[in-house]
Length: 200
Length: 200
Image 1 (cartoon, rainbow over the protein chains, first blue to last red):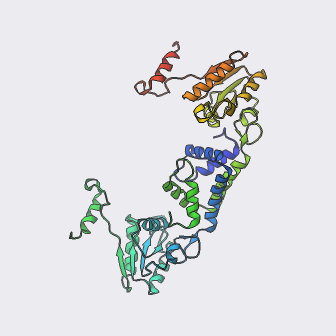
Image 2: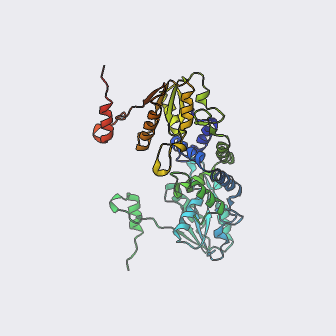
Image 3: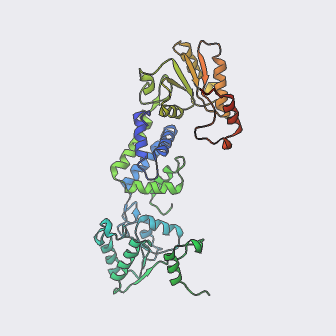
């Protein structure tokens, strides 16, 4: 590292702060940037600055958005009576990619984790209660992760909404597609057994 | 991808142009940039632009440099009678890291490869002949790679300098340290056998 000119050392240092990029990879990437045409490097630098300037939280669902409302919330074809609650914007993107849901989202910003100091005040619960109280929501689908924290968060929401005139559901747990029964953990097997449904 | 806001899609596209970065990794890096503090993103973008602005070729050895002469060529402690010829700046960095050489370098910019249209005119041979003719060089160490192209390039230089008052040497080929004889290719074994030296 110390053999490189200062500006290259600096680029390597900045690149190795990215997740999953070690010093070796950062070095390789820096060499690529050096060899690449000026416009490509310019475009990369510009896109980094642009993303920090223009990306904001959607005012309704708190997903990632270039404007006040995200693409999903703006889309008149989406069912606004269905709200899928997820932890992070990336979860919303995964569900969107799967193309299995035509409603709206609510991004909590994480899951309850008292050990890490994340209590109800750190997440976007108030905004969820307000959306439910507005009367537009028919069903809340809890798609928090199946970790201890995600389960606790789903449970917290389900209890809180128990006396509201809204259906509250939890996405199914079970064997993932292509999963081999003998390698599946006991907890998942138990859930899969409990969640069994009749074959037709 | 199409579910992300435009500026994130653009950042993912720019990142996935880097070598070894697929769309999935680019997505993860983009999410990191989004979450990272503004100053960190700014520093990364700035270091990319800076490297393109300030890095140039050393006027003597053609290595990477922030100024007209690189750190190695500027260093009065280096033996200027020894010139190590390599293909690329990265080769020079590897030798510097190993700390096994105290002379100067000459970076050719590649190896002879007529199939790819790289003949003697595309590499920095003239500059090497001029350095040798200046009379300061005592020994030229050929450290081009051991590929067909690297070998041909070393051979080309050795022939050209045969009648000059300068020693020309080639770095040794053989079994790499930690190498297992049974997994070594025949060509390397042959070289290792030819290059054997007496044990003392």
